Structure formats: structure tokens, C-alpha cells
Image (cartoon, rainbow, N blue to C red; front, side, top):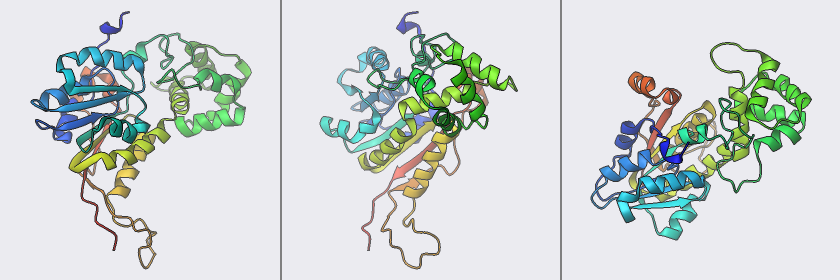
Length: 314
């Protein structure tokens, strides 16, 4: 199947554009530009004079976005890089401060459907799972070389899988494994089928997170994003599993508080002052209509915060 045949439906599109408060002439960053769905909407809404910086670690995604955003000319800047390097990217392009920053942390339809990437157990593919080919670690390396205890820890920590030891033991006994279907079958034999969710779902999530260091990268990028926002600028994050959402929720909570000292500390000694104001106390989730039209959106959660002036610590 040709790359152009894939159609990715951006999740929470209208909600994200509204949360970003996109305005004509504004400057925005899409840290996970993917196939350009959110980017197109941002560029349309920010016209005339708007600019968008699109970042993605996946070179194939950048190629697709470049074709889709070609009509917007120099209004769209695209960079094939990891969003953990956000400040460096923006500094090199003199693209700061900005009016809004978006993170859409979900996998695209293209990535899930690409037989060479190994993200899904719906297709037989090599155990790769890298967002960027520049990464050295692959899922195959973890599955075939990591000790049982370390493998179990990855599956438990990043997949929140309570049967991690059982699964790790079965993987070790079945080595070597080279494809997604082989791994999915091993997990299925180890724990059986219960409920509607395939038993390998959490194991695949765990391996993907470990390969791409997703939580560490996200934590680094969020800290940088706040520094790039102008006063009143919006930070919008769409996550797709509880580990991401928990990290985002905690970070936004901390950055919306003036003091992070333990409750019984008599006098503040941390010197922390708030940089954000929470716009959404509760997560924004897709409507039933969106979930019916795009079932992959069902686990999406969106949180929004606004940059405020950081007061000097007294």
C-alpha cells in the first residue's frame, strides 16, 4: 500500500484547536506533527500570517506531512527530530515565544499499519517498534536478550501488566522471537484470553514505551515547552494511556502551584513559583460520535494549561 493511501483522523481536533485559542498571525508548535491533521487545522485557523513548526522523530511521518502542508508554503516549518530537543530546535529557528504548543502522543494510522514497524500484533512484522530509525534499541533486542527479571519489570512498569513474570518466563522459554505474531502468540499462550482486550496489548505497549523512552522524553519536553510559551500561551496535551496522562497531570499540577514543599513545612524553602494556570481541571475526552467514527480515539485524554507570568521568589 502506498503511503498516500493512509488517512489519519486527528483525535479531538475541534477541541484541540479551541483549547489552543488559535488566532490569525499566531505561532504554534505541533510536537508530534504525524501526518499533519492537527497542523492543517492550525494553519487554516491562524491564517493570515500564522506559522506552524511541526516536529516528528519519524522521517516517514515528516515526508507525509511535508506533502500535505505543501500548499501552506513557508508558513509551515517541518523538522525531523525528537521533541525532547524542543528548546534547541526552536532556538536554531528563532521560533519563540509561541502562542500554543500541542502534543498528540498517539500512534498514527500509518505507523500502526506499516508492516515494517512492528507496532501492532494485527500484522506480522519484525519486532522493531522504533519511532526513529536512528534509535539503536529495538523490541527484538529486549525480547531476545534482556534477563527475565528486567523483562518482567518493563512489562509490569510500562504495560501495567500484573502477569508480567508469567509472560516474561514464557518469552524466555520461546526465544528467539522475530515477529509480532510470534510474540503475541507466546503471550496468549502464557496468560490465555480474557475479555475483549487482546492479552498481548499491554506487553506491546510496554515494549514500545521502553524502546522509545516515551515517558522520559515527554517529561523533558514538557519542561522545555513551558519556557517557549509566551504569557497567555496554551499548552495542550493529548495522551492515550494512564502512564502518560498521570505524568502530564502531575506536571501541570506542580507547575500551577507556587510552593511544592511538604505540607508540614513551616516556611517555603523550595522557591518554586507557578508558571501555568490549569484550564481544564478534568480531562477532555472524545464524544460518542467521534469514538464511533474513529474507534482509536476512545482512550484519548486531553489536558490544557495556560502560561502565566512567573513572579520572582521573595
